[in-house]
Length: 120
Image (cartoon, rainbow, N blue to C red):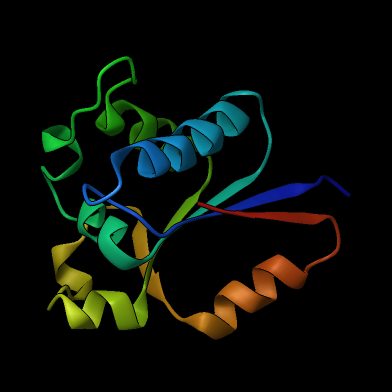
């Protein structure tokens, strides 16, 4: 069974280095062929919306939109149900390929055999 990396991003533009670390680690693993599931929670939930990742800038960091594209191409990206609801983000608002799901799905993914969870 292949190991899966589950990365939870809890920060967005409010803590840009922590946010970029989550996206960088997830996209690096995805590019290396590791099954990846990226969870957008808290302020990172905004990156589920079109154009939001393009607006993110951090010196010496790859563009967030490119990192997100790599993850979406081979893995899964999920926006937290409660986080999305608090920001009035619905299923029809998010980028193609991004789902909205809650804690039960996160727990299922992180407790699966071979899963490794990282929280940023």
